Length: 279
Length: 289
Image (cartoon, rainbow over all chains, first blue to last red; front, side, top):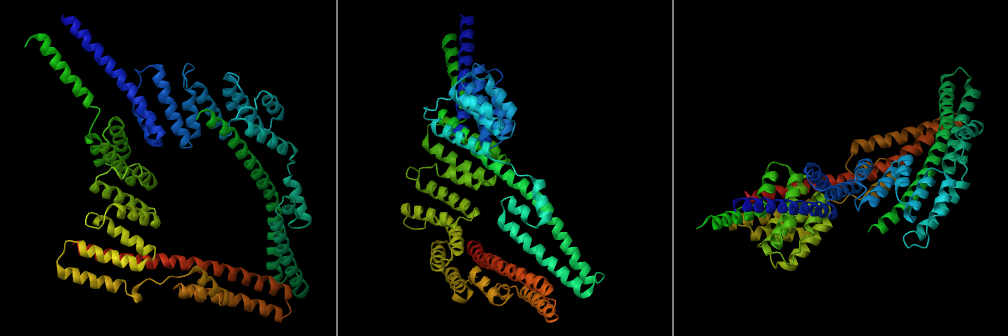
């Protein structure tokens, strides 16, 4: 009789502790859903879930990853998402988001590896196409886009947009910073106009021309050894060389701006289907 | 009592004890809060709220979480948490506490219109200020910042009326309020546009309008100096030098001066408002001392 009572007590407390762990998962989920992300991460980190089932561990890891993703801690978030086991119902979602996070921080090859491991589907192919486009690998982009079912509501608009961006990117000719510097050597400001910054180019031209005329005026009236000529010519040289240097960097900056603009557009459009699908 | 009955009674006692340990009160959270562990405290409040089905307890948890967020300098999250409380279901005293905390956080964020909105909400529930006196000091300061002088003066006077002080002190406080809010003491509004326009006509005048006499004189001197260099060089037939070094730099200092004057006017507004609010705070302290 006594043994029976002891077994009953042990069993009831074991069930109780399982119930508590389940409640803890729900609480962690509640924190993530109420946008208490810092609290969610803290709660998961300090909690001891070592005795919990793999399913519960995966759920908790997912909410931690989700909180990190929401706090824009993308690298950590990707690492957390990747630790979710294959048996978990969160596996596909977490790995897709991990790939997206890696793509966002420029780790395209890692993103591609994660996507390659996932079971083939329209969404996975679409994400792969997006990452390929970020890498400017047009062949892989078109290959993956062929596998995307564009009739699906969460992919139709975004697929169309990715095709549009691919055409723009393919036809885009990158400008040469060296050519810009050369053009600015011939006519100050021309390199900036070539880079697409017409206003800046004209402003540089007038500044250099003004200083050049001042130098010429001083030289004609006071000769080359006069301190005013030396000051004016030094300033002119400084502006002239600075303008060549500036033109070189203007092209680099302009091209970076172009790349960033399209990177953001592509990331935005590969993000929307993820959020819509896993709503 | 046989052994079986005794066993089950002990079992039930321990079981209920273990269930109640999931914290149906704020003891753990409060102790964390007192030790300045605000993040942990906010989690414990959230836990209590999550496990409880008692709406009053959930509302109290939201309020205390908002306090944690305020101490963590996350006023926006505090306001969000306070907005979760259904004011219609809250009891009157608690409602005032919620609105007071909301006003305080909005004041930290300098969102004075939000304060106005919160007070309007409170007015919907409360007919007078007898219960909500605590919100009035912040409300007065926010009305000052919104430059609603008449309303601020009225609220200040109401505050004195409902405060627990002798009639003589009330009279004295009312006189002080009249003195603070008399036209000559009300902070002048320095328009950034006017300052810019002053500097457009006379370089440095906008700086002086904003109370920066020395800087204004310097700005004027700088512009006059460059204009002189320009004129001087052109007079001696150095046309390009005069144009580029004289008038070119004159143009830069002239335009820069206008922008600076506009910035100084905005800064001056903040300064005079802080000074004015300081006088109000001093009076509020005097009333409450």
